[in-house]
Image 1 (cartoon, rainbow, N blue to C red):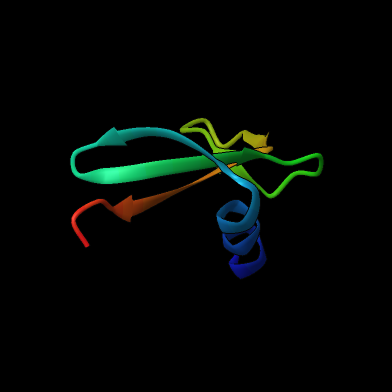
Image 2 (cartoon, rainbow, N blue to C red):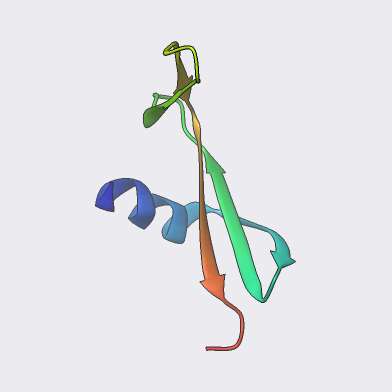
Length: 56
């Protein structure tokens, strides 16, 4: 997870500010994890995002 966060900080693009957080995101060529649906199925994730407190 730390490597994903570092890659996002190094190469991401600013996407928006919402609720006092600046948001940055990055698409990866390899899966960085997965989302588990309520039915138990898994979807690979290729997009990561970090939120940074815009006031601090």
